[in-house]
Image (cartoon, rainbow, N blue to C red; front, side):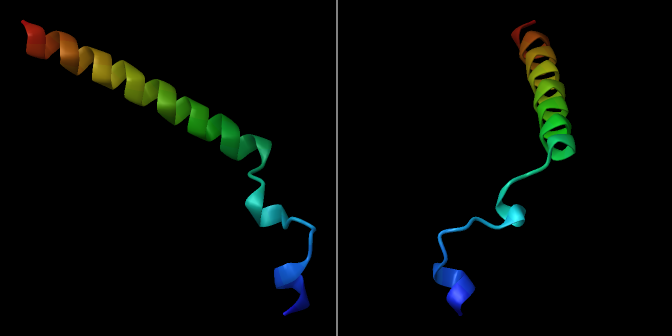
Length: 43
Protein backbone atom coordinates (compact mmCIF):
# COMPACT_ATOMS: atom_id res chain seq x y z
CA UNK A 1 0.00 0.00 0.00
CA UNK A 2 2.79 2.41 0.81
CA UNK A 3 4.35 1.92 -2.62
CA UNK A 4 1.17 3.28 -4.20
CA UNK A 5 1.77 6.69 -2.65
CA UNK A 6 5.53 6.83 -2.86
CA UNK A 7 7.16 9.56 -4.92
CA UNK A 8 9.53 7.10 -6.59
CA UNK A 9 8.58 5.95 -10.07
CA UNK A 10 8.66 2.26 -10.89
CA UNK A 11 10.88 0.92 -13.66
CA UNK A 12 7.77 -0.41 -15.38
CA UNK A 13 6.64 3.12 -16.16
CA UNK A 14 9.89 3.89 -18.02
CA UNK A 15 10.29 1.92 -21.25
CA UNK A 16 13.80 0.76 -21.95
CA UNK A 17 15.87 1.86 -24.95
CA UNK A 18 15.11 -1.31 -26.93
CA UNK A 19 11.36 -0.73 -26.54
CA UNK A 20 11.71 2.87 -27.71
CA UNK A 21 13.71 1.78 -30.77
CA UNK A 22 11.09 -0.85 -31.57
CA UNK A 23 8.29 1.72 -31.35
CA UNK A 24 10.17 4.23 -33.53
CA UNK A 25 10.68 1.49 -36.10
CA UNK A 26 6.98 0.65 -36.08
CA UNK A 27 6.05 4.32 -36.47
CA UNK A 28 8.35 4.57 -39.49
CA UNK A 29 6.82 1.47 -41.04
CA UNK A 30 3.29 2.81 -40.56
CA UNK A 31 4.20 6.17 -42.10
CA UNK A 32 5.61 4.45 -45.20
CA UNK A 33 2.50 2.27 -45.51
CA UNK A 34 0.21 5.28 -45.11
CA UNK A 35 2.06 7.26 -47.76
CA UNK A 36 2.00 4.30 -50.17
CA UNK A 37 -1.73 3.78 -49.73
CA UNK A 38 -2.44 7.50 -50.09
CA UNK A 39 -0.56 7.61 -53.39
CA UNK A 40 -2.38 4.47 -54.61
CA UNK A 41 -5.76 5.97 -53.63
CA UNK A 42 -5.02 9.23 -55.47
CA UNK A 43 -4.45 7.45 -58.81
